[in-house]
Image (cartoon, rainbow, N blue to C red; front, side, top):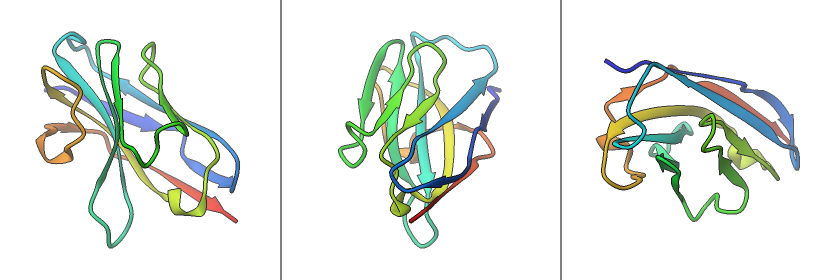
Length: 118
């Protein structure tokens, strides 16, 4: 069973940046997607980006603001807005292409919360 753990959440001012880390147990990067997701109360879990090996797919809603590092899987978020306040998760699944549908991810971290204040 694969294990993941996020860290780096906290308070940040609107317009600021924050980088979240995702530490994982050993896995095969050539056949495992690592995805970043977020939960906002009252809304469906949102896929932000997914990386397979060095191929990355981003959701349109965060493209250009959020960046997944292919070196360490971290999620760098910039130009943050109050609407980005959420609990952020990294997750893993076996895949052939990067995948943003949270329902297909099997292994999840415990999440890290980000609060963006205006």
